[in-house]
Image (cartoon, rainbow, N blue to C red; front, side):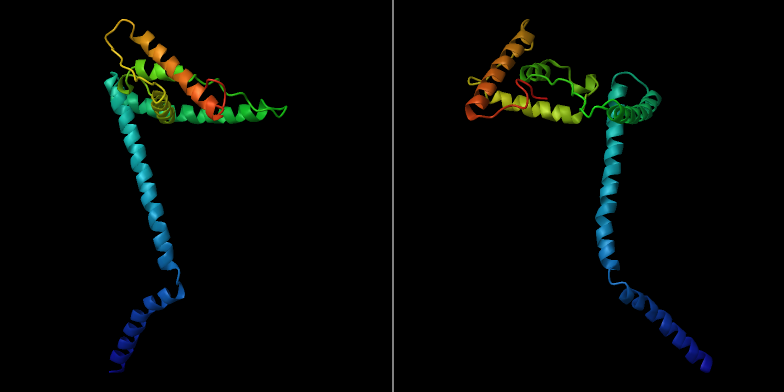
Length: 194
């Protein structure tokens, strides 16, 4: 009988110990609530990376390359990008001994962006420069369309299609710069967008 009582006491103590642990760390529930979004975000980032890799693979397969070449090119592209970043960091620290910043490459005029937007081959058939560049170009072209008073109509089958696009782009750029000048808005550099 004393063994049964000692056994019941040990069961009671073991049943109470998890509750006592919860009382000892009042922030454990809050920590779990904070960690959950971090876990979800990391899973979403990983899924996004996988989708981007699959999209790149599909585009390269569309161009006629094999899946094995695509995988090796993707891995090589990652290492090349990291090497370029390291070289850029090294050159920015060693090449600027006199304290001046390295000059940026010249940007494109708005008319050139307009021309590129309407005459460039679609993305699936050509390697994409970058999502940010594409997004900025799209916004600039949409903004330039606001400055065409009569709108525009392009015929892709015409012989002068590229000339028409360039003429319309220059007209839109002139109207845009005139509008910005009237309002006192100075572009970052004259006639330059990206």
